[in-house]
Length: 183
Image (tube, rainbow, N blue to C red; front, top):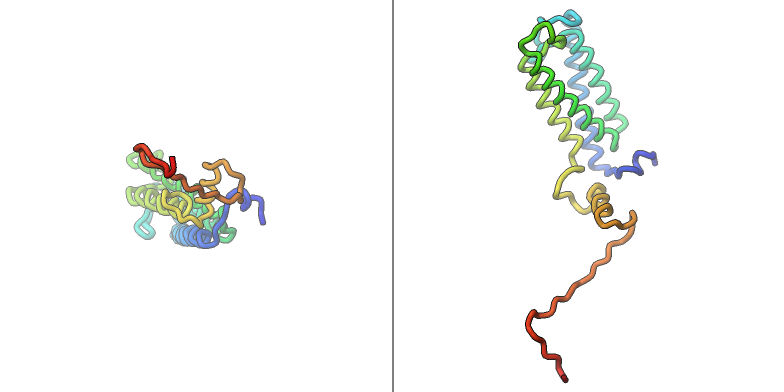
């Protein structure tokens, strides 16, 4: 068992969802970047062809390939690493969407050749990837066999890890006056 797995619990069913999210996202980005480079755009060109409805240039293509390779690596490693990586890369994509919004009307600052379709893709892809990373970790209705639910309950109760819960039934007598038998 690795040190990172002891710090944060891992669930094999959840790990598969995290791996699928990272793998599919990474493969899409690698294919997009590869097709963008095959078109031979200028490295920082602010014009060029569209790939899958998204504008691209050499810098964006290389950035996409690198981000895709990192996500595929996360899918290979799996576990909590894939979950954390999905969340981090998802947030970076949302931030890149905000970057795209700020440079849309300024060709001198738009070094990644962003168009509105790229901005929308960055927001949607970032939210989807972050959702894959948070799946099974963040919710108010986690099942009781979920390791993150167990970890939260242990933290709230102040019990040591692995300690059994004690169930106590509390009896509440009637609010009125009682008459014990024999008195």
